[in-house]
Amino acid sequence: MNYRKLGNTGLMVSEVGFGGEWLERHTEAECVEVIEYARKQGINILDCWMAEPGVRTNIGKGIAGHRSEWIIQGHIGSTWQDGQYVRTRDPQKAKEAFEDLLSRLGTDYIDLGMIHYVDQEQDWNDIQGSEYLEYILQLKKDGVIKHIGMSTHNPLVARKAVRSGLVEMILFSINPAFDMRPASENIDDTLSDEYTEGLSGIDPDRAELYRLCEEKGVGITVMKGFGGGRLFDPARSPFGVTLTPVQCLHYCLTRPAVASVMCGFDDCSQVDGAVHYETASDEEKDYATVLANAPSHAFTTGQCTYCGHCRPCPMNIDIAMVNKLSDLAAMQPEVPASVRDHYEVLSAHASDCIGCQSCEERCPFGVRIAERMVKTAELFGK
Image (cartoon, rainbow, N blue to C red; front, side):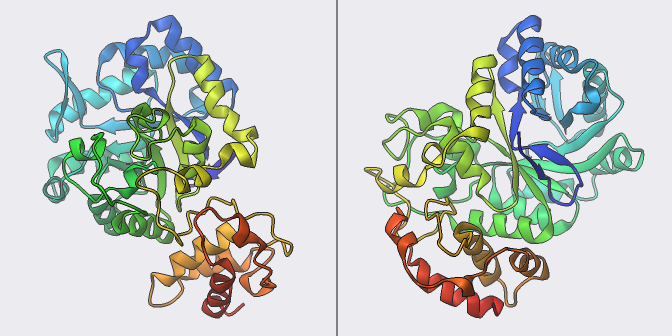
């Protein structure tokens, strides 16, 4: 298992994470088995947004004896009222539900205390200065939560949160289909099977969010990386083709600032399917060829998706990383110091390009890489 820094939190999280939602439909024994199996495969981050008491208890039993090996995303504002899930900003109800989470997980702290599910800008605005936020800040002060995060599906809200300096990481919905969608305050728009004709390429608001997170050191963990299984079904996928779990994981993990993808697991075989990412070949990871050749809604020709399909380079340039850093830098009036630092430590730079264009022959999106290398060398001065 490979591990990545989660922004500036100092935490090292497994590239493949554990999204606990599907555990709600399983017995205690099944939950314990799959959680323990995931731990043994090197998975060390688990998200628990669910309020249902039974699944919280089962997760607690699954991590028992190994709490220190898990990084837990625990949500504040996800409550269980009258037998059903209710999102709330009521501080007392949020407190009762969070204390219940601690108790059922058998822990006295949560690594990532998540401001739960903020998709509307007015909701974000209302949270500021509220008793709900005061409660979260007190939890951080007391060491009950180690870091403050937020979950959202809306890139506009996410950008507000990142710019505020309040959150250290976000849980955000990412996959190649969602990335085409414009921002919305309605979760049904994001999750819809219907796609407007003509959508192509990464939505600018989402691209800006990833750039901003990278610049500010705000890590991203990913939810809905498989699109709820839609991307595995050509009849429901906007691309009209099938993507594999490994391809979906690779897409998410090539976005700037992304550290881990929270995968839902029903059983140990699904853990194996996701963890296979760590040993998969470049051909298995190749989502770019699939998207470029999709019958509909293909990504824009000439747009680099950082897929790495351009490798190998005779000058050993990490072309995908150079392009990613170039895109991050080009969005700013001047090159951010953090981006320049990342660029300068690369073993080979854009200026090392000999213009052979062998990479362009392999690029599924027709990116004019040699030209980009010249412009990047001018941008960074090397």
